[in-house]
Length: 77
Length: 108
Image (cartoon, rainbow over all chains, first blue to last red; front, side, top):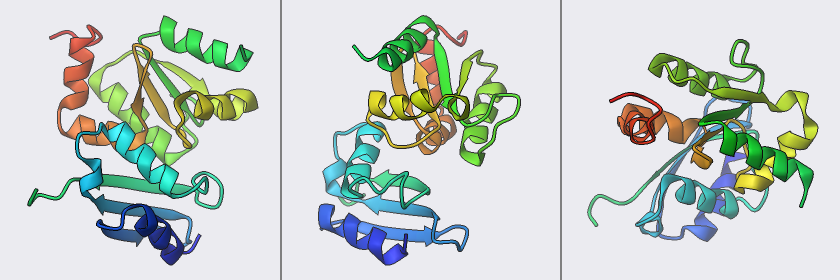
């Protein structure tokens, strides 16, 4: 799944976020995403990652094989 | 009730630490699963491994059970703790060790 597609899906759900996506293997199939967003405040890591999976609308595990996630809340909060 | 869901519920309830993974703890077949196995082994935590590659029903069932789309999945005392990223982060922060001690799985 192309990187820009991941990015636009994430931006739809996290419009205020800082998003950084790296293609780890150069195969468009193993990515690492760091997302910094206020919407993660007060949520457990599992909940935060579930929000990201929902943003990807079912593509995780299908067109997207591996996505290493780092979710964070902005420091200047 | 769906029997796969029942089986999963029994497994995570009757075993303190359960890892749904690809491959076995002796022979992981996926890098992400291997990372979690390595962390558990380093901490000396006994756990039950379930190889989802051997069981197509569990492979899908576990994703429905936790509402989480990927493998590996680590359960501690019946609760879904996370996949590879979360487990690694918790381990690096010392949170995983603290949780295991709190649950009486690791001695203090």
